[in-house]
Length: 163
Image (cartoon, rainbow, N blue to C red; front, side, top):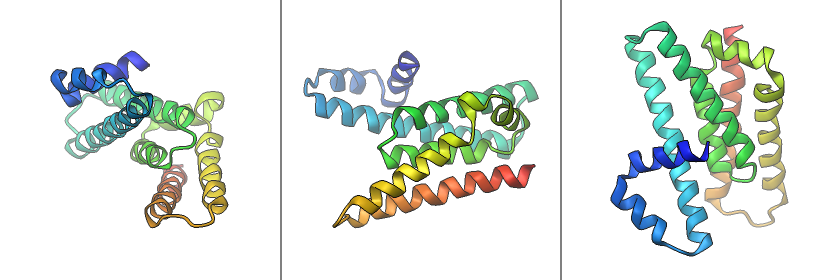
């Protein structure tokens, strides 16, 4: 999965910028860049699904494959970045937009070990606990945490609406 993300970063950022970013040797900057790239990647997937869904010109199998790939990327993100609310929020947006597709719904109910509802709910719980443990939170952090809760609720509502 890391290679796929790396290839996506090259496509999204262009080879020159990607190469320049790799030259930066500090671990903190690499982590920050990786997180920023992951956000761009998730947002690009969300845009792609949204566009395909609106146009409805894709073949059913092609659309199902796209939805399942996006669902997989979102769940992997929820598991990979459990303490980064902004990235989790983007993953939940992607899940919300794919929630009503029949293939996505089947996976949630038949492959609960990997795609169960407990994963996004745990992300919500962890975010809420982190928010409560900060004595003087920044406005931006409060907004991001609230946005995560909102997007998770939209996702759960979309699932319930589609059932």
